Amino acid sequence: MEKVKEFLKRKDIEISLKRYGIDALGAMAQGLFCSLLIGTIIDTVGKQFNIPFLLSTVATIAGKEYTVGGLASAMSGPAMATAIGFALKCPPLVLFSMITVGFAANALGGAGGPLAVLFVAILAAEFGKAVSKETKIDILVTPLVTIATGIFFSWLIAPPLGQLAMWLGDVIMKATELQPFFMGIAVSVLVGVALTLPISSAAICAAFGLVGLAGGAAVAGCCAQMVGFAVISFKENKWGGLVSQGLGTSMLQMGNIIKNPRIWIAPTLASAITGPIATCLFKLEMNGAPVSSGMGTCGLVGPIGVYTGWVNGVLDGTKSAITAFDWIGLLMVCIILPAIFSLVINAGVKKLGWVKEGDMAL
Image (cartoon, rainbow, N blue to C red):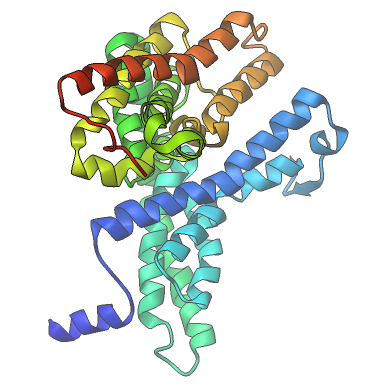
């Protein structure tokens, strides 16, 4: 057993929740951002402003035509797997082999590809790391083992994992349609909390394909956390804190949350209020890339995802037009209401003596 532990340590193979549930999951979201999400934004810009170059076919592969944005989106599997490999500290030959692994896992995982990529990429990366530099023909052995392991597990577990992710996502989305009030609260709070925790809410939303009303509730929850912390900590952190939390991430407050968990009350209660407002009053749907559902106001990706869904709906005829009510709902749910509710609730929490000045200083 000691020899096994020594081997794993030497190979930097750390079997832990942090390495797989935080580092790998967070990296997967970055891979999605740099492929599927950016590709979706490029396509939306092309359609909205009628830019010929972005609308025209730049490549035809196996009879399928791709635009510039389409090519970026098509690389989501390789991007996710490579990002995961980087987070797991893979040596070069393993890291580069993850491109093939990601393509296979995403393709065989279907609509639930991101979840399949997460599991398969982790397995392939660790097997590749285990054999890396153990032979004199490393240039052949390491890529061969990494790719073979990745494709084998893609064949074995990617389809059922993909189906499981699709099923869970469908259950959440249908439940939100049937019970928009209660599910609006649940989805908003849970995804919002995940955004602030050192895990990836974006990757979770992508893995389960959360769109529609459930996606709208997720956007509401994430925005409530980011905007909420940004405004209630303004006295301590000024404009720099407002921007870094409001457009960056509320995860910056994790250290302070550990010291005083009560600072989390205001943004979380705000998300519990804005969630059902999004689903019941404004009928806010996020029909862009699912990863956008878990991004909140980070780079305004959440609102941009909602807008992307509107544009696509108008183009395919499922939505007649983008109305003033749509814009009002988006602004209220993503920015105005989270700020107001968080400030009011936090004032009450301060009066109770649970939170004091300086508790949220970055």
